[in-house]
Length: 224
Image (cartoon, rainbow, N blue to C red; front, side, top):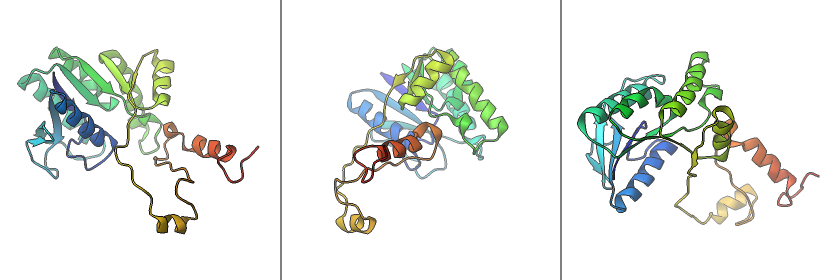
C-alpha cells in the first residue's frame, strides 16, 4: 500500500506525541513492505528526503499558533491531490478536518486521528474552542474512519456524535531500570511506586488516577 501521513510537524520526531506516533507507525509499515510518505514542515531540523525508509515531503507553513498547522495541512492536501496517488491518507488532528473534502476528491480513503478534546483546553480562546468543536463534527462527517488513542475519546465520539472510532493506544518501546540514587532522593524504592506521565488535561484523567491510587491498597495510607 501507498500511505500518506499528514497534519503533524513530521519526522524525525523532535516535538510531541503525534510526531512520535508518525515515526513509530511509519517505520513499522515500511518494514512490512508498504510505501510511506510523511508530509513535514519545511525549515525544521532536517531537510532530508527519507527517514527510516519513509519518503519525506518538505513544505512551508505560515508561522503562528492558530495558523501553522492549518496552513501546512492545506499545502500538504494540495500536494497530495496533484502529485501522487495514495491508497490511504492518515490525517492527524481533527482541526485539519476542513481539508478532508480535498483529500476525498483525490479518491483517497481518509482516516483521522482525532487527538484530544482541544475545545476544552484553556489555551484556546473562544473562537479557537468553537472552531475545534465544529471541526470534530466535520471530521465525523467527512472521514472514512476515526482513530482515538484513549477510551475516554472513544466514549466521547460515541456519546456526542454516535460515531465509532478505532482505539489505537500508544506504547512505550523503552524500558529502563530506575537509578537507585535518584529513587532514594525521592523516598521510593525500585518496583514500589507508580509513575504517571501526562499533561494536566481533562481527558488524561490525572485527578482520577491519583484519587484511585489513594483509595487503593497500593497506597501507604489508603482512604476508606
